[in-house]
Length: 282
Image 1 (tube, rainbow, N blue to C red):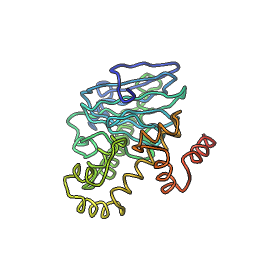
Image 2 (image 1 turned 30 degrees about the vertical axis):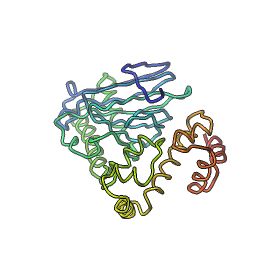
Image 3 (image 1 turned 180 degrees about the horizontal axis):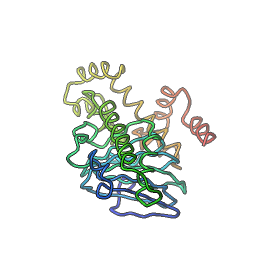
Image 4 (image 1 turned 90 degrees about the vertical axis):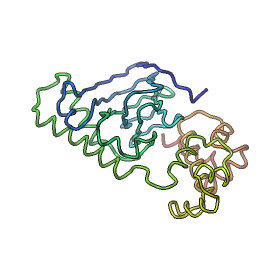
């Protein structure tokens, strides 16, 4: 099954990884970070953990890969930051012979950062991370003896990493009343959702759900569902070599007619035309 992951690490061809931990970098320990690292992942790269004992975040900074978060695989592009709480399965892999790069930050279990809502369940936040990626790279390379630097420099890098992360989890975390609902739906877009089943997950009646969704999203629950399905379909069409009928099934449509009609309403273009244009830009 596509959504199964393995408890293993496979470097693949051309992978290079670098890391630094709080034991040899006091500056990291001071800000409540256990370790950091970055890597350039080659063809065939795979890393997965079924029930990790630590909480962490990871950010794609170049290329394109796939990340397993919240129970499913998804496209991993630059600017996508993934938050993975302890005990939730996670994984990353290269796809279709492509390479990609990302950095990661392991959070100390006593850190105040873990009280943020983003660490309640796996979630993804879009935010540019190039500046903090540079700080991670500097600390890791210095730890390998590339050059001798002052403790003040290491403190500055560690503080930059922490401040960026603190701002990210405090301003971008899920905060809406319906966020748990949409997180559940995101993990199971292939289900035959309707107004009643959505309301049941949210713990309200359909009328109240419609009111809440209008207040938070400005649209109806079913319209929100359609938008989520179309966005997932775009990801599948842009990075996976799937037949269009399979894409439709993966996002919850029983046939191509229903999928094509919903996609065109949201995107203003047919799925096949959208895929053709997306491939030209790659």
